[in-house]
Amino acid sequence: MVAVIGVGLAGTAVAATGPESSTVAQEAHAEALVPGTPCTVSTRACVDLESQRAWLITDGAVSYGPVPIASGGAGQETPSGHSFRVYRKSADHKSGEFTGPDGQPAPMPWSVFFADGGVAFHGGDRDRASAGCVKLDPGPAQTFFNDLVEGDKVQVVDASVEQKARAGS
Image 1 (cartoon, rainbow, N blue to C red):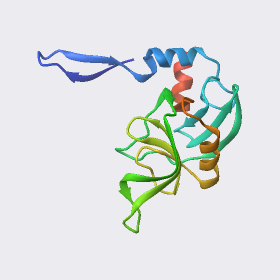
Image 2 (image 1 turned 180 degrees about the vertical axis):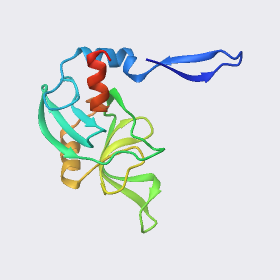
Image 3 (image 1 turned 90 degrees about the vertical axis):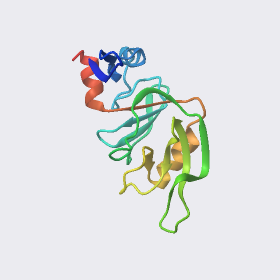
Image 4 (image 1 turned 30 degrees about the vertical axis):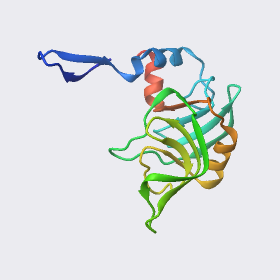
């Protein structure tokens, strides 16, 4: 799949491969899936944006989940990808961008950061879309925090897109 993403100064179209055509995606599609998930056996945390569910994976099998999530809303979508990595954890993190009803920085308990822009798994109200993060209920948020370590791979996908890519559609 090729998508036109802009027009160069000389008027020629600049094309880029779609996310499912990247080398990383192709490598992921060649790898076995964890049964019951849309993610590969080498990942430690799996998010399906379509079903709004997440899993923890250990040694190529589900070790926890599925659990319900809330992902990013319109204009602040949770980024998708096959090779995010946990890069920081903060048990009592406070948002640097958003405030709560009390005007104080919004709490983001049990934060596990994995994507650019401060995207993290964290506890929060799943009735409200996030600003790109993956919000979990308090218990699952603490489980993700306790289980994941820096360097662990995180995959965030749409199950039907993954299925089509694996089928060669």
